[in-house]
Image (cartoon, rainbow, N blue to C red):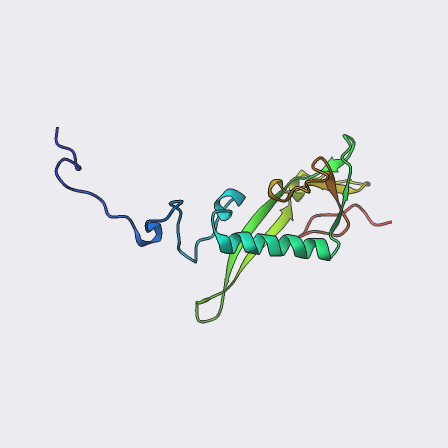
Length: 144
């Protein structure tokens, strides 16, 4: 049996996969789907760090001890590449969003979110965030 490698035929790698240490795309338009994919790129790591620090500085949540009776909704990172009108990259955008679809409809209590695994406070690893504000469209409890 003659294989491609025995016959000297080999596929060339696309430009986006140039020889790199980690073998991930170096394309600057690349938009990751998960934190793990984004964490392999310095510009996405910096963007997530900036977003996380902005959420802390605006008082979006407070860190509180976890309790089994708390209504805890999950969270995830969402990534976008913002471009200028001429098509060049303006900036990278990472949003930490609460998974509001896990929330109960007739909620009368506070909403809690786990710490993102990549940004766990080393002093309080089992604490959760108590949301103070609506976060990216998360429905809050009915108003009094």
